[in-house]
Image 1 (cartoon, rainbow, N blue to C red):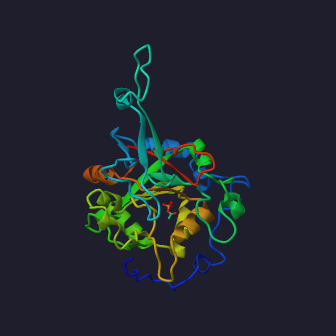
Image 2 (tube, rainbow, N blue to C red):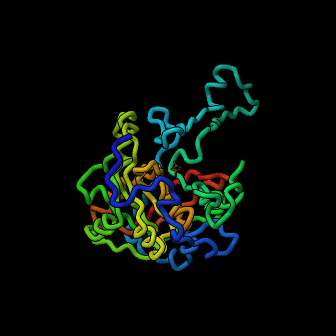
Image 3 (cartoon, rainbow, N blue to C red):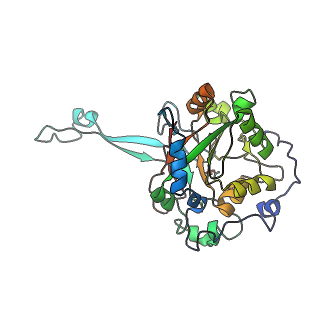
Length: 327
Ligand code: UVW
């Protein structure tokens, strides 16, 4: 792990201490049975606002490939890359392992074993918590065995469509990729938006580029995991208040966990708690944003229609997704 960045805040040793007793919460805002949180902000008017941001018709897909044996999927340390196994193909017939059908047909089938969060994915709102409650105040023991509440399924059933806005922090800093442990503050985010001449509007799907996932595909693999501390947004009360005020429904980034990984004091991923658990902001992680960013930089248009729907996996803490952006 790299040296911890100098963060302009007192060192806390628990998430609860960092966030404090009055951390903003949207629990109950959309009723006691809500499981999709801030996606409720994406009403029909937001879909039309997204559609209105389309002008050239270019299409970008943001998912990284799954199951390439030459380039194992980038994953959070401790998770394993997906493994795709062919269970039927021409070889089975050639080796006599499958009887020849009388009508002459052959076929190919695969199976895949993967972490549901081992690729470009949506986190379920109950994926990460502190204390004994998850999003909307559901008890933490509703996660035992499967997520009984706020799994990824309701997000998948609903789908996500709205106006997306891309803030390219790497480009603003004149870098191909941010460094391990490099923080992004609210001021940095707003300054980068201003430098792009971009206004982040209320209810925008906020997409932040660090260059991190792109760098994985240029690295040896080992380099990527050395000094493991992903760059990204850093917790501050101002940042959380801003997300709340701006009614941001969805945070999308090109890192595996959407925020600076580690803090002095041993904390890990506190924005998962402040934004996802408390505000119900959905997280789309591990996106490939480089081609989209190049296109936005070329014509200086940083907003577009963002659409996504993770796979409908019952009770899961996350699910793969291939978000589609239309400019
Ligand atoms: C972790 O939970 C570590 O990360 P993610 O949100 O990417 O699943």
